Length: 506
Ligand code: FRU
Image (cartoon, rainbow, N blue to C red; front, side):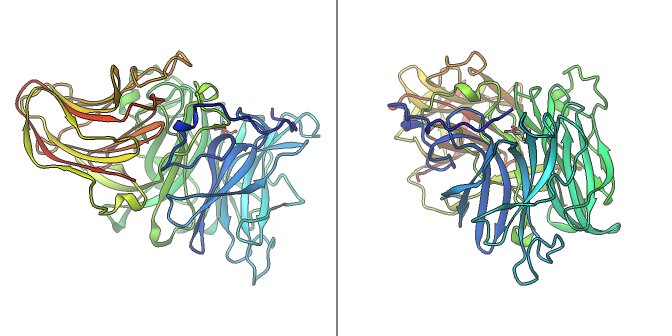
């Protein structure tokens, strides 16, 4: 369990700052993991995050804070909720308590309320427990005060954490709902409250589908299918570590109904703890790569938009990634929606940010036949968005080589016979800092009208691939050499066509 140390900030390690992302939030210094308390208020997006203010390794868990007007450029703010000798501040959420139901503000100054997990240290009378606590802010998130009645929900459990709270307004009434986890039991637990202080048990969900690791950081929200407000489903997100689809940490989701008391999944494939791994590819995964974890959504975003951010890392090797002085970044924010594929509702995800608009491409290739082989494309492309559409035809494989230099490259490859897309980072640069890092991550992606559309976001230490307009995504960290900025298109076998190819720079 975390304890407060007074060690100096982690020193910067020479030569590693080339990995500092340009399009992704990273803390100026020191360790970062899960996004916490994501909330929009009066024109500002607030990103709180699991943070060690005293070093580049996990520990002293506190809520760091960053703000943004556009979800792309972030300003880091002072630490919002620091740990102390009694408790570490684990993951949780934030709500805008508009009607001051909690009484922690006033009618004129409604509070922002953070609901976080108190991970009690040995010095606490509650040592060894995890329970849910409140902190509130009356100045739009700048300063926070812990509620004197903490914890507000204690199950005498050592593994009860990551509360996500939202306002429910439906057939069963209007109240706050909390989804949290009993992590080791692989269970989501649901509670309700009128005032964020007194919580009443509603129900549990799980174990179901992937159960090969602890369940963490749940989320629950309602979305229309294909934009139809009369046809909605609820999405239950459950992050899991280890036991994710690509190994280690990952996020799974269930689509179903929530009646204000019980979540009923329509996408459960296996129930209970009897997981044998063979059906893993039938489950709903937020991402099929290694580095999209603890993903949760913003609250209070206007127009019903649901925007998620994940921690772009994996507990398998998060402590060993070769950056110095700072460690870990967030994924790009993703707007999620529901659409039907073959009659079934599925999640679609789009990266959000100004660069996803119509910004004019810095490089465009027109439609053309692709000869078998490698077609170098004028670079450099280190931080870039690539929009590409292939018509593989009779070719065996088509794809992109990114972040290339000599033998170094990251491969985004579509296997036509198998109908699978993969991201291969085995030769992406520095890979030997941890045995679990070199990987090939794969997802089934059917062609549509014989075509494959990819949107790829390259940043200094990451590759995010959105396939077929966001029906499948693969996110992986890479640590290439400084020279690895070349880009190429490739085809194995004849008969492929390039339908479109645009590169958009920062
Ligand atoms: C997920 C997690 C959470 C916990 C936090 C601690 O990555 O393990 O369950 O609240 O990180 O930093």
